[in-house]
Length: 355
Image (tube, rainbow, N blue to C red; front, side):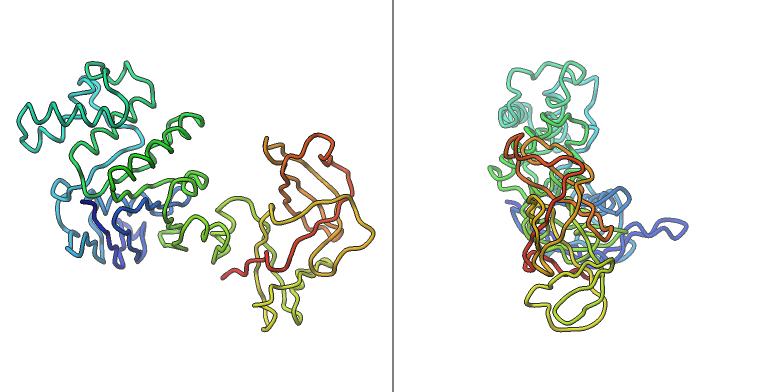
């Protein structure tokens, strides 16, 4: 049976006053694929290590199914761990690596053999029991590490950048496999990554971390479409962020650019920041006129061909640079640097941010 996790005001301060994690509070639901996402040094791995029991919080508490485990040793927490560098024993066979946790629990040989066989079948490594890690590919080694973690039937599976060492195609394949296995086993899985696409593709919910704090927790759709802070909007995918002064129902961002605010934000005064995703903007050949507040003229400055889409950088008449992503509709529909274009969007696509 998988478990729920409560992280209640947890901080970690190292010698010298370095605060790696600062009053983090969040809940991981039973059977959930929950990702800790953020740049290097944001505190996500330290948070994971405190859940695992490898680090002790300086303050706060960690609870599993309501029981306080803050000071419970790692080997008594009933959690599996998968590391980025696999952490396999090079001198032991695949079967011996997978069996390690079972042997530590004192199970008999017949039971161990049956459980190892079942775990290897789950990760599609049947028949490789007698090989050593050096005889395996990177993807196979990661599967061994995964089998070793799940063979003990943990209530919680913790993964620290487990796919970081794999090439892009294999990484994508392993994303599908790990997600499928997690759902099949009903595991509560906490997954650390710095890769935004990976977190969006795999997670039920995501906690975006920055500077030791949690900026936002939400589903991939919520995090992407409704970021609450400038950091989240900027970190998750490409985006255009504008900051300006409210003028009636509009936002004056300077250099002649006026943005019509969403209906819910038309009242108020003061300075405001908004985000506009590149794919929310429509790019057309330059029109004679533009709708005030929801369109602008510009010149294509650069293009990035992404295969299924094209990312354009457009310089507006006043000097603002804007990213615009369009589906790849064929060579005849592509814009090239120097083309005059008109950008169109709807006010409802602007997302108001907390600074």
